[in-house]
Length: 85
Ligand SMILES: [Zn+2]
Image 1 (cartoon, rainbow, N blue to C red):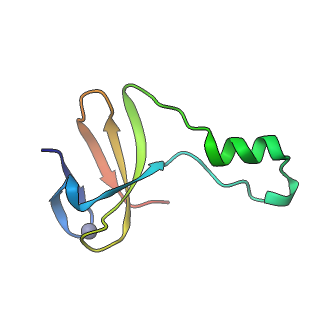
Image 2 (cartoon, rainbow, N blue to C red):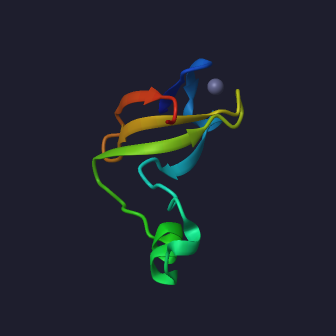
């Protein structure tokens, strides 16, 4: 079973966490200046990498805080966890 290290709570089972998406996606600083096509891409389009990936996870059944996880999506190896920027 995959384990994630919450920076606040320590090592926990992955079932305590909820996946929150790609940690590299940034909201446009001025949403009114973005056209519909670019806004739709921000909302809906995501990469689905096989390998290294930075992700957001919420410790839903723990401290409820968001953390970042650097994970290999193929091997499920966790390289690092930390706090979001
Ligand atoms: Zn926690």
